[in-house]
Length: 84
Image (cartoon, rainbow, N blue to C red; front, top):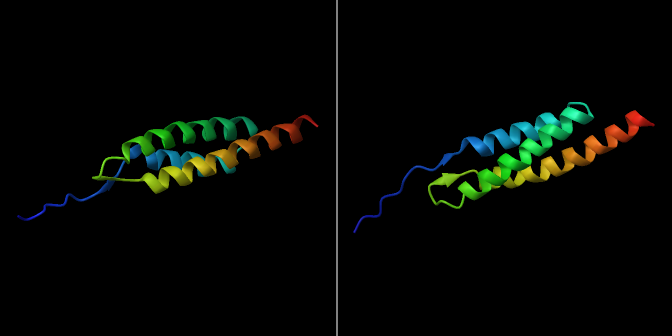
């Protein structure tokens, strides 16, 4: 019996998540926070979709979640620096 393997492919949510997380570093406090939240939402969606064996992007989603968490911390620091 021959086992057929399907080509794995990245899903759009994991790509959106990593792009939003990276963009959150280069913006101000407000947009950094918004982009970090977008990265978290799409990272979670990408992570859920990655449980399928034919889908790649689980590691990208995890990296984007970590980057988004850092982005939120940086956005809060930027906001505090702006107020002070």
